[in-house]
Image (cartoon, rainbow, N blue to C red; front, side, top):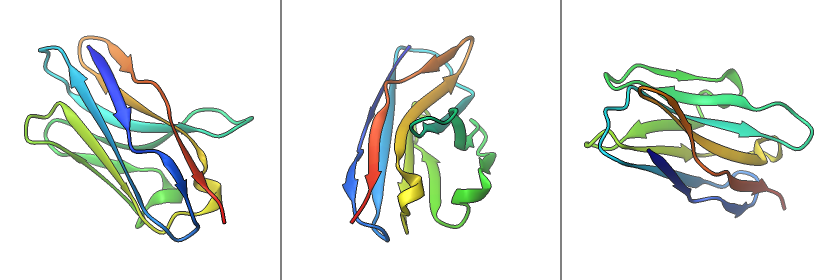
Length: 112
């Protein structure tokens, strides 16, 4: 399984971005998620969604970010609204099936 993430970029505080991640390979994926890692910090969970729609968000993004999966369950999206400078990080797509898979990071920079 390969994960291809896209959608990062530079946005002003208060703006929005939508990240996408598509999984290749015919495999049943249970959990898909987004993690992020800011410079000098550990990688942390942002949001995760299971194959049956169970969702969990990190406290700093609750009410601002929305995670969803495509109908085929092999794509995951992260709608990020009301972005703050502290959201600046490399965002990584994650998938758990028989193994754990990571996508390449996509950089999100929130700055005026």
